[in-house]
Length: 146
Image (cartoon, rainbow, N blue to C red; front, side, top):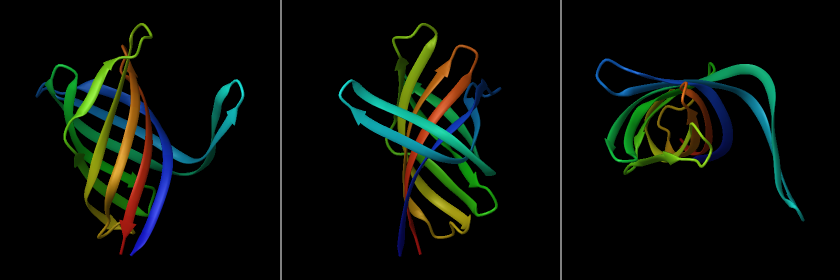
């Protein structure tokens, strides 16, 4: 068994489906994430490296005031794909910035193929979505691979 930990920032959009649910579609390329702890606070940057893209697609069902469930898949270039579903419920609410919602969710990997066949693990997502549906979604993943 091998453990793989990584972070990616995805960007894309969310839109309404005929069912009343939402659909999210985002993508990310390889990245270098930097964080510095300084006397004045924390600074960070994300540098895109290019190369193959990861693509994310999910369906979101609102389950109550500020809560949701989500399921979908993430394809990591030509390496393969994982499928996921929400652990418990995700949270969504005001960010304090006019017109911007913020949220968080934990997904459990329910299956995979290619290099991710037999994978299990968790992905955490902290995201924001604006009034036009633009999404910025920060993933931290911990995969266990056979």
